[in-house]
View: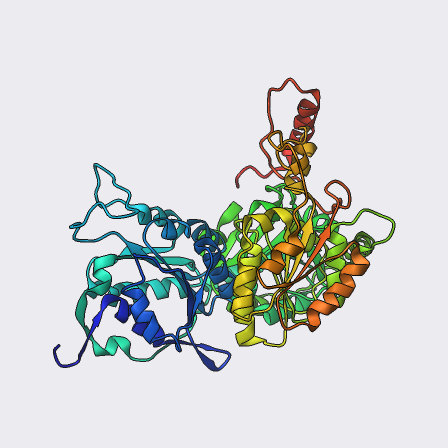
Length: 621
């Protein structure tokens, strides 16, 4: 070892570096990496495990039950921290690492930071082929880890210890960049993890990071201002990027100053309180009549921090064909979609400078009044939709019960299936940033794992609040083991398992397109001979949770009160109807591939009906 260097293994250097990275959040410093999720195997236990053991007080390691769910938990943790902090996931070489592919894709689609430290095959190739190694006869450098190149923002394979002096800072810079944010992957060959190197001592000095805020170009702001000032029916689409920029106050001030109605994307839910007079509701396929009614009339649309995916745009049928877009986004890729006037930069700064440029402008009162009247009608619909009585039990009723009884700072988590639409449409926001509906990747299995990750972050930020998970029976059966994780780690969840007997929302889509129920509801599976209901209460109790089954929304309310009072993960199970009780209003058209040729009259009629709305679609510009 030479003067000014520290001799460490590759694994030890990675962990020591991470432990010395900090970030400033609201004037307070936190360790940038909140710790990690890990399952050990022969590809990461001997070297990376040794390094993590020595730093367990600084970088706590949560033992997961499944690598995919570990990745979901890491993504939810980053989302709760508004992308200011991240967790790492470590997995062994082979199937342990490949299990992370789905969660890496989820983090990539949702633009969330997550660091993967994954085992890899031996660089020397001396023991090849090793256990779990895939052999490519014509390319010995190719392996499972190369698959992550498609689902990460930063990818590297560490073939020499000295590489991490460049690679680790680059990975972190990517994860913290508002424009390029996403998961980072480091492949760690089993031998290289243990190789020693004389690292420069200054590499391990304490380093405090700050999230970059890019000021938008003055000409872009001027062009956007000129267009907005010409608007007779302006509208704002507020996406998840508003929260990541910590620009909620600026959004509200901008909307108030210029009297512009605001609608929210799925990721942008909880940008505004439900009671704000300019909050016109969620937009799109899983939106509200109110938001969609003004969207189809708006002449200028200011899209802030949204990637404008198809559920937001109704597959680009939700807007007038001559509507003009202004897109404020840190990512150039998102700012230029559909011939938008781009304002590339930080939302907080962009709203401030754009507001100054349009000082004195306000939307016509008649337009604002029309939007507010639509919202009032939608509120009436939701109030009736969530009401319970002599009607089939539904997702909406369960959502309404919880909404009435939860605390304002409780965090709601939902994902794929019917619940994202039902939560988005029916949940009334009680406080800012309290809703996590994962719909960027629409990934079944995220719910409970994501709830666990969110709860870890909440315990650091807001220990008095609860994490409430809405999950259907299909997603529960796919991935539920983090109920056990939450009990082991004392990170309490409230989990509502709403059982509709299978994949009911896809069955609904199947029926709506003229198809017969087939292979979605358990009762309609041709290879199921003796259908029976799963005892979710007993299953959850077997993993250490307090669990109970309720018969109706009234009993659900009483059970939820018990769950709130408990200091332990509490699972509440209730059956809901697979056919009745869906939110029937608020939907835009959504492009779905339907058969152009069929022997079924019902399928043919549904195809013709579906295609009849295509003339509203903006054709790629």
